[in-house]
Length: 294
Image 1: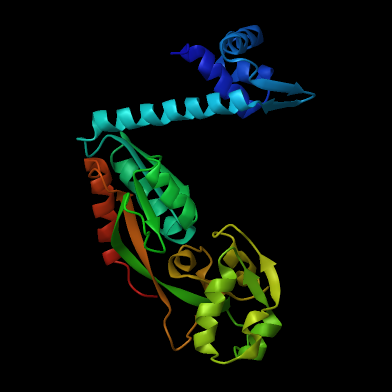
Image 2: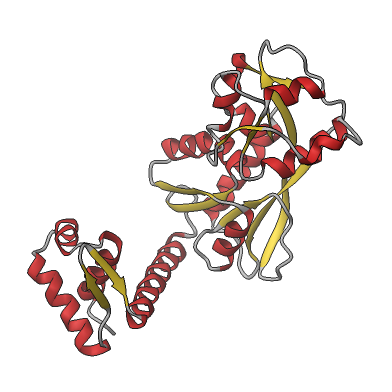
């Protein structure tokens, strides 16, 4: 077992990249940080390659960092287990795609405000990262837009979310040529979403593979800023559109057909959710049941 103070200094040093900033962060002297690293290197060999203004990890350093991260996860799991019988106290960790995350986040904050001893830890992530985080026990609850094929997780239907074709309010000419003149606001899932919806709205159109892009953002909360300013149109999940503050500046174009994704709630299969996580899930189900189509 390595001295926890040494490990804390090493992990902080890998995050800050600076002995000075590490000392300031931990409230100790720079000499103490150097001494802690030296003690670890006496036992494990060189951990760091010191370059001008840069610190690189050796293979031993990378292994030690993984060890520190495993200790952090084990400590978090222990804290969860010690408080798992409480419904209004302890951490609730949830990882979701951006659209549903934007919709539920204010309600997670409301739950924490009602029960201040709850600690909400929420992360936005694509499906692959959501699955990995649940499998590795970094988060207790996950939401995915595809059902995972992994025996280590349990998946249940959470909600459905249609794709929407969103245009600037007041823009004229919403036929194919009008949209192409306006241009597409792309995002990481934009091309695939646009292909799925526009192929229904404009079947057989030869230009579906060549959408003219007039903007791009990888932040789901910013995609519609382009549209609101009249800079293009986009295809986006409904919850992301509903979370946008400037509803008066955009309009959902009726496509005559629906393309709907099922969202899946996932957790580790081997054990049940803690009472506080179950409470959050139940509250979210009630919230989604009350959502009216717009």
